[in-house]
Amino acid sequence: MDILFDNTKMAKMFKALGDENRLRILQMLGDEETCACVLLKELEISQPTLSHHMKLLVDAELVSARKDGRWMRYSVNKPGMQAGQLAMAHLMASKSGLVCDCLKKEGE
View (cartoon, rainbow, N blue to C red):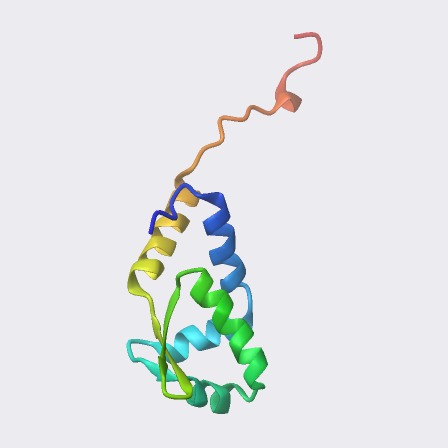
């Protein structure tokens, strides 16, 4: 996944992380694959709401999904999470090169 310099992918990732329930989902997944039924019970949300949250996390490549009978099983996508860490480090290290004109003295 080449997320580092792709603002569209980074925005998708940050949008996925910008919700309390989705952050809780990532915390609940930890290092184990988890069935949607467990997430539903713990979050006390409806199945369509969980599906919406999971779609955003999967589309952002932060979570992987696989069908198991009638249920979905989810796990953290470690390469996607690592790319997210690198993207954040990139943002913190970026310099825009913009110069503030307000610091110039009048008449210069």
